Length: 265
Image (cartoon, rainbow, N blue to C red):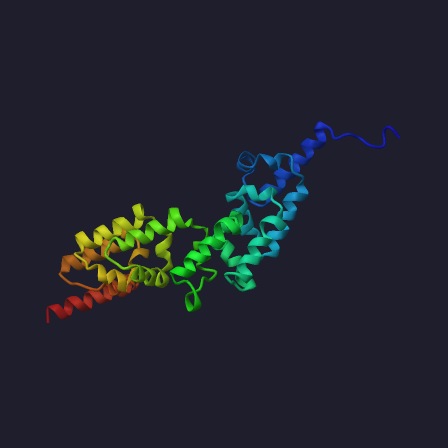
């Protein structure tokens, strides 16, 4: 009887550790990074990892994407799915609301949803966005739920105040961001500011046109805005922002040729 149960030996623990490493590698998760950022992972049983991956799979997350998410957020590897995932699922389904077949699209677009507190982060941001105009026909979708991970005070309000600083009213800014939600994902310092400066100083633009075409901010300053404006300036042709930016390179060149030929008729 005294030999019927064996204490866990160093070799046993080494075997379990090796199994976890192999499991992580199979998921395409970097084991070194995972153990460094989530020390609890070393003492957690392999069953915990498998429970997490099963739960993500039940949410519709494909295995290839699952590895990317867990590598990005290794804290999830040892979480309790019932406490971490299912409150989020309930929130997305019943409060946002998102259709169940689209829940995985919300998560794939913004994996940080999985680590955000519903009470402290997601619900307050949802209330703020609804007051801003994201309701009714403009309600959040699986493409725009990524806005929910943004902190209201530190992330969303500074962008709104920046746009209001250009001379827009709060209502005008609200209409702009509802029409082009990506505005709320852009950095003021790296995106909004430089694009406004180029538009006003180099293009001599009118801020009213930004209100009509807020999608201007979604185009690359270096790869699209500057090159196309430079071509227009060289041939002495002007276009509104939508005509200048929204079409493909081929469509823009065709418009440029047509405008130039009409100028010389």
